[in-house]
Length: 290
Image (cartoon, rainbow, N blue to C red; front, side, top):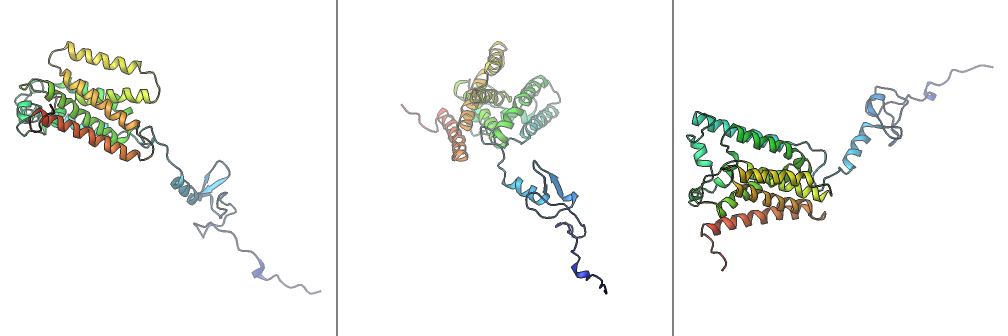
């Protein structure tokens, strides 16, 4: 009996990786069942997934969020930026004044500090800029240390945008309190109002998470006592920031999940409008209700 050589077309072609056609493989993705080389496979809870399935899974998986709706995996960035801005402004005022202990000769210090008698005549920017000035190295060191300690956790929970809103609106709230209830010939500087706003916000978050508020309450009480005991510290600015920051944070973390972003933006807008309205009433540009 004659034997014929096997037809070469009957030999099956080797399976190759879908991403690398030049690489034969006997492995397959356990999700899509396509052949893949070891380089294109990733360990999974069941079998191995190809890189395409892994990428698709990441796009479809819902990322966890915090109680305010912020992404839970974000790292704090705004805190570092705020600290850097405060330090840069302090350096500029010290250079202009020629001293780190007496900044009264700095033009920036004089123009940016909150002086109600000048604010009433159009220097509205002082309501915000005063919060980036400091009297001396101890003053800025204490405020930046508090901002770093409290701000990191606050930014993780609120996210960068909401955290920035609480900081700046709280700063504005402290300045408005000084305008409403302080002496017209006073002069106020410092980030303390914004820092107290973060303290008020942190207290609200602790209650929202149903944690023990004892430590936060103690911290706030101690700082308020210091504000009263040490001359030259603006108690009004601290209380104004504390109340404003607490109110805004409550609006952010208790906003309903549905249409959360709209509620939060609306809360920021309303609070800013109220603060601006109170300022205008204080200077007689809007008649007060009688």
